[in-house]
Length: 292
Image (cartoon, rainbow, N blue to C red):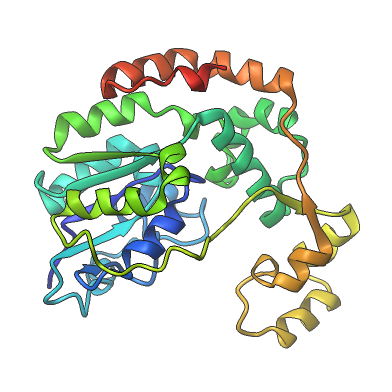
């Protein structure tokens, strides 16, 4: 059974879903339908995220049908967050020739995007962004969703350094550059993977676009708790995975989220400053724009 020869390891809320959906259009690429199996960090994430593959055989089965494909991979954002566990297990199962890709986003923007995503999708997020940041350590020591680690998931430097030390081929994609030039970024990925850069890819669609919130607490309650109205919705839209996938609901029951508070932004910049400066040196990338 063929196993992955590349991994997309994060970061969360940095367009990994879009990267995945563009990449699987390439005729030489195979990625399983389950986007984030999280197999290499299963012990760290089980019971704390919605899905993960713990069983070795089930992980191997994800790649059935990949025979004949030049590049085989999967995308699990927790491989960046729990990098020590991930690296040990990746080397155990895949060796150190596997190609590693990551997309990195301004950690302040990533944190606020993650908060807004969780606020829309997880009824347990009942706090303001500022209060949620204060509760982060407390939540980490419980079974709260790991995606509520808004600050910690933006500390990239140590993880990047570790991956660069343990693997021969590491490709970093910068979120801002991806947003500005999607086709150019995807072609750069295909070049890194050693496959045809000119393959026909549909770049018109976007996935998991954020910046939305429920228009009021009543709507949030109705569509995020078990109640008769939600049951009716599920029967009516059986093929829909969630309310946000329905354009009618998004248009009528959601609105654009408010900008991040400027004091909060400044506080987060100071929190991330040392990590950003270290990352800039590690990657030889000018990240001064992240500090303003």
